Length: 539
Image 1: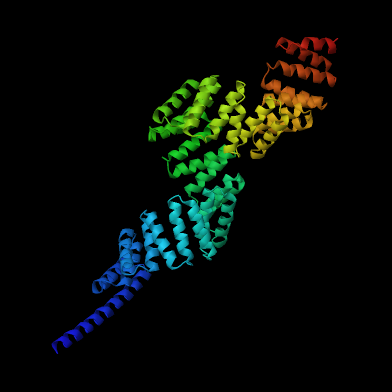
Image 2: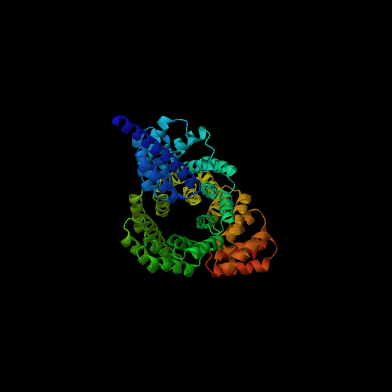
């Protein structure tokens, strides 16, 4: 009889514990819904005290701990659920997320994989496993998971944003843009989608579209440093230095010690020929971080552009002292050697950069330029490698085009120079090179058009004015030729050939006396043909 009474009491007690645990679970759920995570943890903990195998209480306490940002405790709770019930998909998924938040993405992937084995049609789990794979740099695996998530009709815009990122990393920029477009259809104010799409457009040289997207981000969040920085970088690529500097200024207004922004502004100011400002920015970086080899490189570039070659060499040497593996320092010191006419020093530095990184396209191009100067036939191999590594760089096609022009491969030169201006409509040098090729091919009209385009970019290019004058002479536009020679002489009053050519053009339009004076000036400046030509025209 006593045994029966004890058994009855145990049953009643267990039922009471169970009822109390359920009440605590319900109370915890209500607090969880109200985001009272601390209160929820307290209730679920009490439920667990009453029932140490309360699977639901452990699961929900884990969620409450996650709400408090304590993913370590959350994961411990989910581990407990899984030990009680290894097939609890919810625990596997939530634990995967907690592990990912703790940086343990490999374990997260394992947990998501177990969950998928239990439920192969849960698109969300594929999505989160994709995120974890991306964190481990397995972008191919991430892309496969994102594809599966989309296939299973996961409509969250974040799926498309993340897949866009994975495609961009895989250099499928067009595919990335398609995904970002879809994400923006679902959420027209998704900053990440605009930012990612802007980056993808920039990579495909749709700079106007990229600027539009970055600007959209700034309309949503005016102080978004990432959008400001990215837009500034695009302006720099477009050679709109004033706008680039203005955006870098805004970035630095929010973060005055941003080394990357200071270095980028250094580049923009150097390109804008504000060498004093560029040096000041590089100095600021060095004051912040005296071991910044990049700061010494960019300061050296500014000094080199300002014709302070001795100080520039010091900076490049200092950069290499700080970082003997600085490809950038070797490339730019190579440029300095090239400018000084030290072809061996230049080639050695470019070669060293390539030993450090066989995919350094700039080093191949610049080494090719030096080899071309010394008539080394392997120059073309370097240009080919540079283009093979980066077929979107206008300068590389310009370099190869000019090299082909030098060996009289005019058809090949024209193809390369066409590509150069297609890639960069502001490539002054490419227009000049193409104009010269067209002149050889007797296409004076085309040459005149290209010289005009070059002069639209730089009206003070005396050589371009002189050459356009010659092209106009071939087109019998002698008045236009005289106007160009006038401008060329205004820029360089010692250009003997400009005086000579102007003298000839003036004879053609009846300005005999003035033309004869030009022949005298040309002779005075050293033109050997002017005296004989004067005898013909100035009798």
